[in-house]
Image (cartoon, rainbow, N blue to C red; front, top):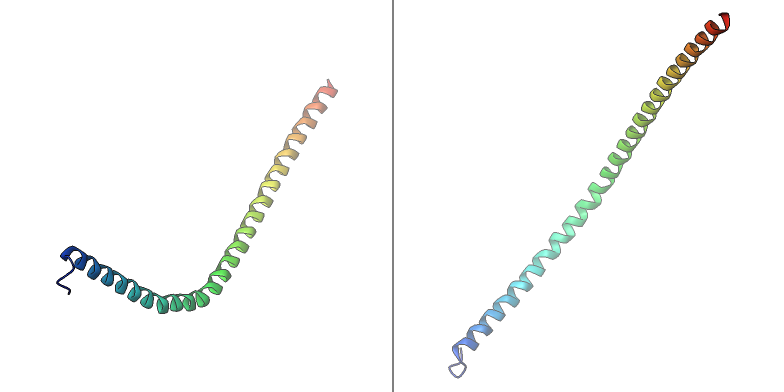
Length: 95
């Protein structure tokens, strides 16, 4: 350290150097980690896509089944109502 520079300035320089060194070290360490993460993502992503495709197919099947059940129930109810109306009309016409 220089005796000519004030202590505060020397301390600031030391801290700046330490920060820069830490930053460089972090960047150097992050690069291989990033690379490894990309490799893992490439392996995992297709599996996730397949799962998502399967689940969407299952959901579509379920919803279509539900819709079919609903329409069947509605049809039964409508036909029952029509039959009741016909019976009432027939009774009225007999009077």
